[in-house]
Length: 459
Image (cartoon, rainbow, N blue to C red):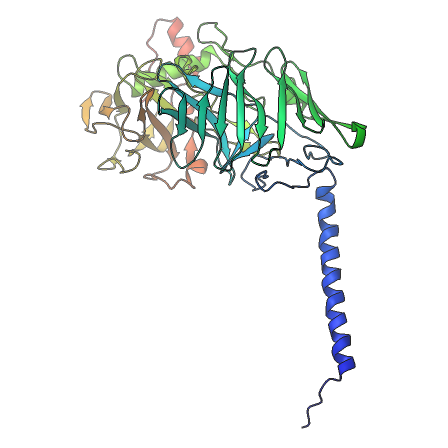
């Protein structure tokens, strides 16, 4: 069979045909991207990123260069709180601009809450002193550095971005400026009660916030030549906007720590305090303090953000916090004391030794409190040794490996459905049980207390 060879005209024709197909594909891709970019989502700085993974808090993109578009991209409809969504890149993290830089005066370190870019729960970064009292560096796998210049604190990232923090109305340090390594900057202004009033860039584009009862209810942006374009985005979640202010009331005292407006638990009530007191009596020695309702003890309020429970993301998905369906045991109200650590008797099997990374021990119970078929995992166990003492078994002390730093000594306890041993990190969320549900209800505790009976668990 004879093979025919293409003529020069055929070769040219094929070349233009392929070129036309490539151009058409590029145009089609551009058309697909237009709905996303139409609200000012153009990204012109590589260090300003958006987290869009399904398991992460929804965040919005910054547009630092193109003044024809808004400074911040926003969806047509904002469905929930924006406290954790308006963030700015901080190395491998995102920093929520509504959060404060906390200072622990007793140990002389700073604490910053950040969100991982690859999703997951909020993390707390410790910035500890180096080279004297005015230079600080982050612990762990990050290159954050902080310089204390008196009234302002300068936090520099590995990317060269500089965050300026200053003290405002509530005495906490809030971000007042962010300047990247190319010199682009945004400036933040605050109201008298230290809420963000507006954010502006050097061209004059602004983002301003409307509030009702301390909750953000609208966002307004101005942009374009002469700043003539103006649009307001209402926040359409009435349940969040009308929630009461967050109070911490162990004895009627109110705490003023900022708590995200999308927190699902809005008050630490006397019933929660009674439940925590009962759990401390079950799992801790004399003077022990328990936290099982999303809030750290009041004595830790100056060292760590108070709320560590459930959050509702802007995408309508629930995010569990560190103390969602988990509890901490401390040796004292300020978190620094040591305490004996116990579990209820009645377990039929247990692990033989603490795990090497976080000193965890597991115990399996055919029956525990109100429930059947339960495993307890106790993390950060020090001096592990079983000692039977009636209805309880002492297993060691609080503050074992992973749970003891200079200002914070604790053990972490979780409850799982079934005989699970220590589940993988990925499977724990679906297995966790609320600690307060395992034992008597708080209403029964209050009733028994009024009759003079001791409030103890039903194990």
